[in-house]
Amino acid sequence: MDDDLHRRIEELVDEEHALRAAHAAGSGPDEGELARLKALEVALDRAWDLLRQRQARRAAGQDPTAAAERPGDVVEGYLA
Image (cartoon, rainbow, N blue to C red):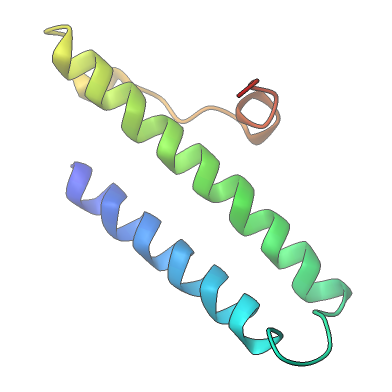
């Protein structure tokens, strides 16, 4: 269960790194690429949040599969 989530996180990170690397030494990303980067950041935040929920539920002796992915606007609203 968490293996699938870890793979998804790795895929998202790889895509984000590829987009950033494509523009590291030259012109910046275009509007579509900027939108994709933002979408990737939100997707990563949601995936990490779900993973942390599962880990917390497991540590508390609860069912980790009961954790649910939260909407992007919720996850993005967290304070650091």
